[in-house]
Amino acid sequence: MGFIIAIDGPAAAGKGTLSRQIADAYGFHHLDTGLTYRATAKALLEAGLPLDDAAVAEKTAHDIDLAGLDRDVLSAHSIGEAASKIAVMPGVRRALVEAQRSFSLRSPGTVLDGRDIGTVVCPQAPVKLYVTASPQVRARRRYEEIVAKGETADYEAIFAEVKTRDDRDMGRADSPLKPAPDAHLLDTSEMSIEAAFQAAKAFIDAALNR
Ligand code: C5P
Image (cartoon, rainbow, N blue to C red; front, side, top):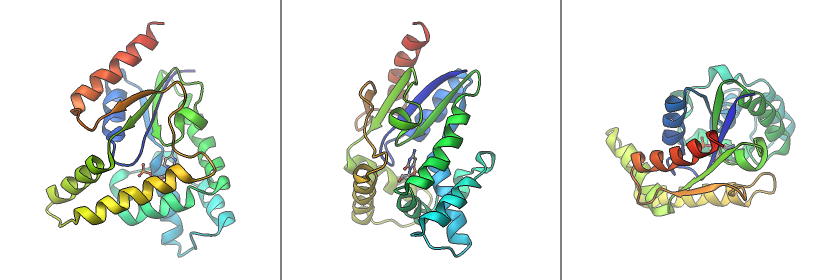
């Protein structure tokens, strides 16, 4: 079994960028688990299936192939919203968590990022990070990302969406978003990507040397 790094946090806190950097630096496999929920939601939407039928959603989740996940294809805001709706279903979570766990065992190591990696998927991970930032900063980053692509964006609407997504992810009964008791907290509100990476690296190196 390889070395597992579990990274959790709310939407747009910077955990995706950080996870990819860590995986590159250590030569580990990376899985963005949000993509598994997004792929399930997209498959339902494309098949014209309802988002509120737990049995249909669970069956769809079982058929998701981790090898075919692509953030570019799954990045649409509407897919993220649909993903957070089906993510409340225990059957969907069971199916996806099983696939995520088997991924986590790859050698020489893995980085998994999501909402429940340190608490549910890989509670045995030797390094757990909880990456967060204020809702204002996260909304601002989303806004700037969209504007940088030459599209128009409405900051107030994005801020409201960030709050709605947080409430849904933190308030659900099954696997709500929260830091594991032994997670290291990284608040990136006033931190550069490089500073966040250096802080994470210090925790990882300490665990690798234990
Ligand atoms: O991180 P991302 O925005 O791609 O995730 C989409 C949605 O999938 C989240 O809002 C959350 O509801 C769900 N999710 C989850 N557990 C994970 C990863 C994502 O419930 N481990």
